[in-house]
Amino acid sequence: MKLVSAFLIGLVFGTGIVLSGMANPAKVIGFFDVAGSWDPSLIFVMLAAMLTAMIGYRFVLRNSRPVFEREFNLPGNKVIDAPLVLGSTAFGIGWGISGFCPGGAIPALGTGRIEAFIFVAAMMTGILVTRTFRNMRAQQLRAA
Amino acid sequence: MTEFTPIESTIGGILIGLAAVLLMGLHGRIAGMTGILGGIIPPLASDWAWRAAFLAGAILAPVGYMVVTGTPAPFDVPASTLGMIVGGLIVGAGVTYSSGCTSGHGVCGMARLSRRSIAATAVFMVTTFVTVYVVRHVIIL
Image (cartoon, rainbow over all chains, first blue to last red; front, side):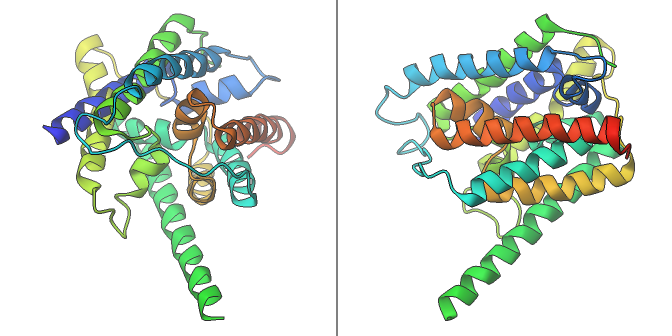
């Protein structure tokens, strides 16, 4: 039941991404390219998604717990630190070069287009390498 | 380059927001692609199963689009293969450090008025505008 639910929610998410144009790099770059022929659609996506989540969260977070789990898993970190700022900067550079963000690229795999597979393979490699590097450094710091 | 689609984009945005609300209400989780995907990349998270199910649903969405509308989902890549590889590596590294991307920080975190998410979103939006300007108008990749 839990897995069916997660699958269907993923389908709703992906459908939103596809309908909105976020899975289409040309559309994303068309939004960020203000000096070209600007397509403002993405601002509608972000605002509609954020406002829907803002309103909906108010209702569901009133419950004592989520339906399938014991507790809500909410990020508690409030510190704006260097990894957050530098990581977001890097993400913006990669997004600008490729037109793909993770949430757009994963549903884009379903188009069967090779570019999406190349991007996702590179992105997963990036995640894996960064994580390995970070764990190695953490171990070195502990050893020192 | 692409048509302005305020209606489709707003409906799409509402669906993304709805998925975020459902994932919180039913599973108690933030609908952030970075976090969900991270759990199925080795070392696997103990709760990888729901993540895989969510990802499978997301990947099937363009297939559903094609079945319902009879046309493939719009898809056009105005960047080179090298751009896909370099962009992918940088995005993967970046979101690992920032612990989130457009969905996690930009939608879910902003909706919770998280200070970290507001900062992250401001930084990556500005950086993306600048990058696209540079890549499209200064040094054409």
